Amino acid sequence: MSLAAGHSQSAIPGARFMDPTVLARIGNLDLVARAVVDGFINGMHKAPYFGASVDFAEHRGYVPGDDIRRVDWKLWARTDRYYVKEYEAESNSNFSVLLDVSKSMNYGSGGITKLDYARILTACLTNLVHHQRDRVGLVTFDNDVVSFVPSSAKHMDVVLHTLENVTAGRPGSLKLPLQKLAEHFGRRGVLVVISDFYEEPDAVIDAIAPLRFRGNDLIVFHVLDKAELEFGFSDASAFEDLETGEQMPVVPDAFRKEYQSLVRAHTDALQQRFLANRVDYTVLDTSKPLDHALYRYLSSRLRMMKVR
Image (tube, rainbow, N blue to C red; front, side):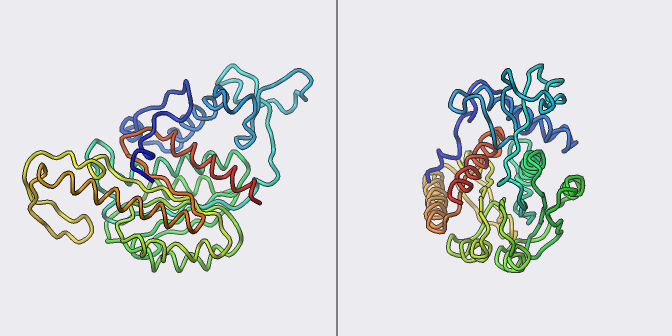
């Protein structure tokens, strides 16, 4: 996968999504998640290639003859449009986000850190899934499991509370925490892993593979800051390793092309390995709106349901 795939324009034609830095300043994750998800669902109803029905979002446009008791009056109050609730029996499943809260996730060059972007994304994904009556859960990890909220239809508030209190301070390592978690996810479900993946591709796959082998559907979001993708620095200075604290002097202009090539090789290698393991993988730029991530999740889930 080329980096361009993670830089796509708005996935939903006609939809408008707020800048992630603006969302981060709002502070209330519940409010942010509701606003983003509502805008996303409404945008999907306008998308020509989705037609009148968005089964996965549990809504479709009202047509004469539909049972009026199935109209979502709360959605009507917000949008002045009539939508009918759809219930997809197969969608009632366990859903958990595995969120990397290691030290490197604290980096941000444009007003929002990778961790804040990932927190907002997690809040939006769990809100979207919660509306589908799925059971939602959350795990945070660095070099070990930090917090564990098991999947439940009643845990949305607990998930949001946990996200509100997330901090990143310790170095990270994927293998130990994900191996521990594999034991807890033996029941088939959907797992979303959100991380900056500061490890070699083979080590990443080795860490994540046990989750896949337990029968779970895996979706991976690789969150990177724009500066990490493009290396748009201009002044020579010492650059610090976000995990180890080690510093190295660098002249950006001389190193930029080589750096971009290394990042592209890293994401391409991850894409190939994830594809071979039937894991959906997407690179996310923290300067871009969240609709692309939500659309990729939705598309992945629909494909999974068809395969089943």
